[in-house]
Image (cartoon, rainbow, N blue to C red):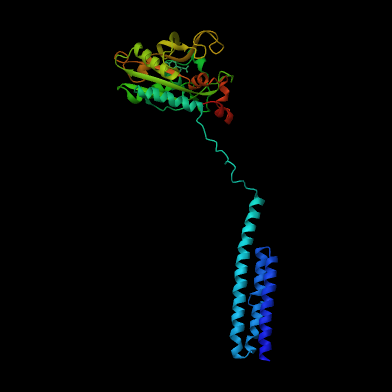
Length: 350
Ligand code: DAH
């Protein structure tokens, strides 16, 4: 009787093994293998079910059935392991191809930021003048009528004020500076009676029709040097050196007589046209020359306002527009591009 039971159990184990193996080949997902595991090997699974009958066998018959049961269990566990690895691999492959990642595609290019042409030009100007011993001096954009005009030798009613119409604030006499020249006074007052040699960069404002050639806001770089025995030759030397470095060695230069209330004598400085080399073209309006800045010897009245005795001291000053320099350098035909905030402008130039 006992033997029959043993045979029966061994047969059941064999059958279980075969069925389980067959079922495993049908399990096509991680989920299915879990179900398979609990059905055959789990705590309430069929193998456990068979082993529960072990107790009803006579003692000497148990070891064989136990041994076979262990073999079946190990075999099935190994098979399960193998199957799970294969399924995991297949699932990964499926996910990869579903996501459609092509790892051989080149990455997205990162666009690099660029400096604004005005910034580039300003930095070049700083480098040239600091190498000649000029310091950079900051001066306010909001000014008084006194600094923007009066101290620069333009008392109320002076006709030259018409060249510098500006934006006024609600506070009487407080305005946006029309040029960096009031910085001359600030710098002189800061240094007098010691000599001074500075450049003053910054924004200036004009109440003017905005056109391709003129904006209501732009930059200027002012320069001033005051000391003993400073002559017009010093001005010429400094500006010639500047033009050669900024526009290329061997430039033709022309100092044309002009008028500014704060300098005497006053000049406007031209270089031979960078585009046509002086032959004449639309950029230079067929004159062969390009105006690059205004300059002159600091007027005695302005020296006095700056705290210097004009008998003992003399000086020169100049003012230039960095946008104008950039226009020529990058061949930009409209000054409005500079501050219209279109990033394509930055991509095109520089
Ligand atoms: N401030 C003048 C302007 O805005 C430019 C200028 C001319 C500055 C002559 C100077 C100078 O320092 O000496 O048009």
